[in-house]
Length: 427
Ligand code: HEM
Image 1 (cartoon, rainbow, N blue to C red):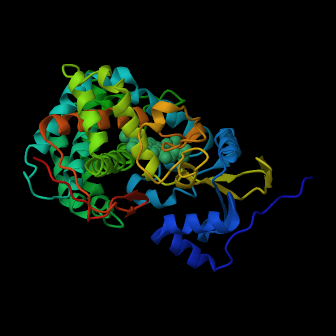
Image 2 (image 1 turned 90 degrees about the horizontal axis):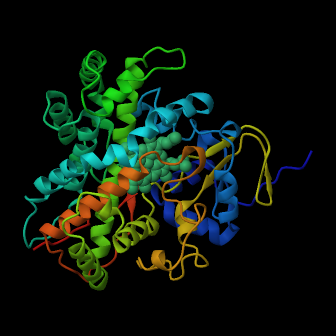
Image 3 (image 1 turned 45 degrees about the horizontal axis):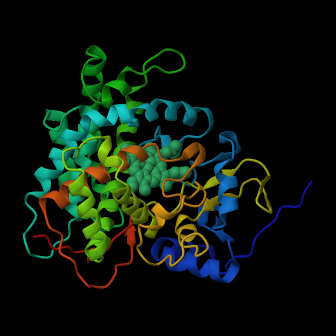
């Protein structure tokens, strides 16, 4: 048998490593890479030995692992309280595969395109009340937009009693928590009431399968024995999509406004591109605008919102790049460190969308949505939301540019987001 390898890593106690991972992740990862290289052994509490990887070849091997070679539920355990026991993020193997097959069709072009006009209305309604000429933090309204959009997709509208109740629960419990450590904690306290509402919706949709919205797809789906999914499973899918999909997309918009307001030439070029596309603001045309797409990709490169894909805990000894890792080791590709490699992204600390029009990146070189069997199911939706929201904002408002200092990210639960100091001015 080949001897398993253990790359070097910090010697401080596991509790200290966990603290630094949570409180100052970027500084911690940069220091680890500088001291120990592109594969670093960490000790992270109940996860045990975690290998932080920033070598693209190793990342490729991780993404190529067959789904039965690892488990992710241990890494995603902290989502259980808000997503529920049956969430896709907490499943592995066959159950995970079955759930992915259920969720993925909801996020294809043909499902999303017909909703674009309604999503645009959500954006326009929300940004109308932005203050003119005064600095403000756009994040609460951006989160409101992406929450409403998700409700629209799930229930087919945003004004039915269930949709309205969910939107108001979100506004009461989460909106004010932007920038906090546990933004969904208060929402999770409302779960018993929300689950009752969702169970009624599921019943209605089983009786009337023509009702619009993803909820009907979930309610009508059958398991491998030909029976309907349990109410609990449908409900957990709703919670998972809300928690995984709302903050992530909103944060991408917040960062984009931050970068655009600091780069007049980039903003100017984007506004010109959007003006050329006027008239097709809700369809595929918007998605095919090269500069808008480059800005989207560069936004997700600079500070990846989900800073690492789910850690993969190996079920058997496994070869990754030059290493032989023992069963039980958790492998974590570090998206931030890969995105900051100078050999891939020269002048990596500068926001420069052109890099994405100049060269192509492989999935193990640019990985904001993770990859392999667990890659993000909402990737296409996130792209639509970004294109619709940025084009609508720049059509309605003129974004004022600033020379204020660049912001560094802070924690927003498991995500990385701009700090509360984020401010933009619109005219
Ligand atoms: C800019 C926005 C987004 C980013 C950066 C993002 C990023 C990610 C990443 C890195 C993962 C882990 C992938 C892995 O382990 O390999 C993930 C998983 C996931 N994302 Fe997203 N995401 C975004 C938006 C969305 C949206 C809009 C939805 C759905 C509505 C969504 C639903 C999910 C789900 C359900 C998973 C779990 C997949 C699984 O475990 O099989 N995400 N996302």
